Length: 187
Image (cartoon, rainbow, N blue to C red; front, side):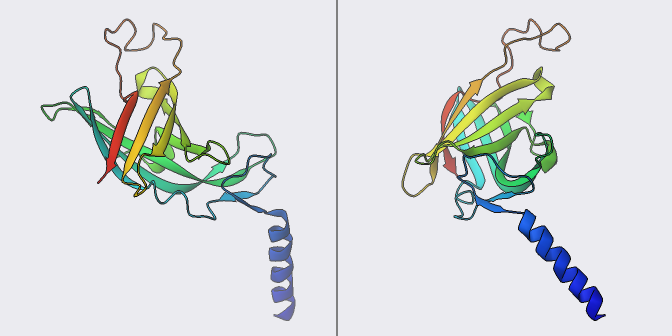
């Protein structure tokens, strides 16, 4: 029994020596098996439901903090606290135009990146929508007041090529699921 306990302690010690916890505002290369953790609790202030109106449409965005494992770099997997976003857009008649609020967290179309720079208060997120011809873009969010109840949301669409297999090829107008610029209010 004593040997089993010692082996367990040795295993935990070896594993914890290899795993490193880094702050969210880490801008250097991230070592393998590290955890980029929101040590200063910066992400919870963004969590919740945010709403705004743009071009007669109501945009509702729900942000949630999760821990995501990144394995895109060969032989350098790591974990990181990020925000994910799910949204719903309705027109002035209440008709739902876009809704991905029921997708799993793993399939959220909006996923956080990090705080833009060490001095910044802007948080960047990626947008990928396979339902709209693999639309991609970058979202920047930042608070507009000190109470953090209003947030500026800016979307830059990076979709360059629409191929004929896209259901919206030659669509006029092309679907715009996200506002380019909007002020959102926390609900």
